Image (tube, rainbow, N blue to C red; front, side, top):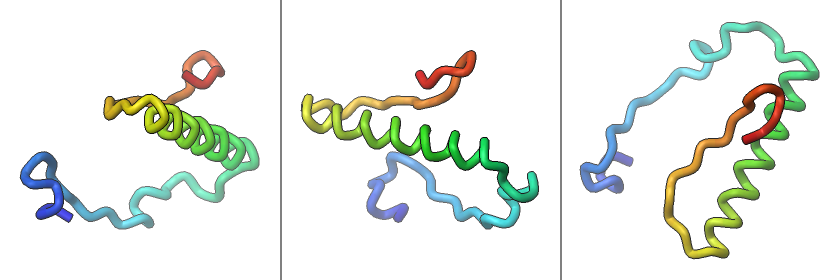
Length: 66
């Protein structure tokens, strides 16, 4: 992966178990994950249609996706 980035970024591996310390995800967590995934996918598709190669951040602010 690092070679593919041509020096533009560093690649670090992650152990998923270290990331998941919060226990079993609740229904709320799963719904939020789905909403964020959908919003990210829609943004990528919109950027592709517009020919944009910018950077976007998808998150939740005051209970709304932004």
